[in-house]
Image (cartoon, rainbow over all chains, first blue to last red; front, side, top):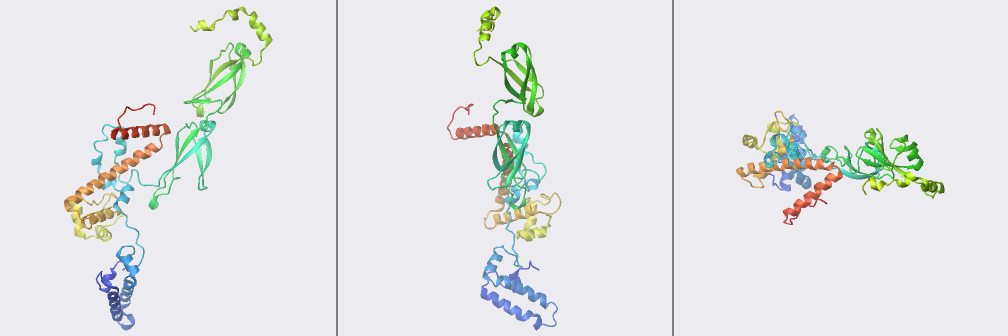
Length: 301
Length: 121
């Protein structure tokens, strides 16, 4: 009954004046009032319907809102009209009403474009959700290599716990589902897109899945070999320097690369002691084979 | 939501005879959005659009079909464009920079400022 048209109920035209409406209601009230019609079972219903109609039309403001569709005949707020574009943007029009005529010529030559044009299933597709939010996060080298959980504090005070996967690269974007803007009209919230910047490490460098490290060794270690301790992303390890190792020699630590993938490569660098050593100088003076050795000739310099 | 023709007409503010004509010409398609018999909110909105086009906007019958087809093409293109945008958004920053640089180069070329592609950019 809330859907009966109040104008029809009162028997007035849609452009009737307020005075006409008031008169019409008064006539009806006189006729229909239950107490003036004790024998009419339906009088109560009819009278109440007329009163409800007058409640809307008798008040100029309410009448205006009813005419504009903002309230219905019972005075209840009517939800805003949803336009066709709202449904189409939410992906609901692709089933019956989709038209690929606009891009039919574009998908053939281009695999990538074609995947955006596929129209499978009416309700799937890229529906209207909340917008994505974009963030930037600086990450320490080892956190990026090994993986870590970090907390971002947002400008509005809220906090986001971000899991940085092991092996994350500089410039990569992490997607946190549902942590973006809320959606209009109860759809899915957007995502938080976090672009990470990996800070350089003083000693390690990354080479794809591998880690590289320069390891200084002493002259004695280079000539006689020996054991040294070197860092890796997951902790220190003991490494054997082979006898007779030159600067530039590369040793490989298998499995000590990024997130367990890849290896760590050590590049050896032979270092003389900083301070001049008279014993060493005396030895060099007297070492005939050493003086005859010309590495530049060997490499054609 | 699944409603029948009578309810659609009531919500859209149209006569049932009108709906029959629109379904016959294919402007409104039942069993589309819901995959079963009946209509949904999208069909009500489409009927209201057609009502507005024929009424206040004053388009003739031939024009309605053309307009609806173009509206449908626009929405499918918007959907595809949103997809491309979403796919780009999660790419490595170097990929996004390359795409933006090439897009700017193409825009300049379109505007007549021709020049060779600059690989250093």
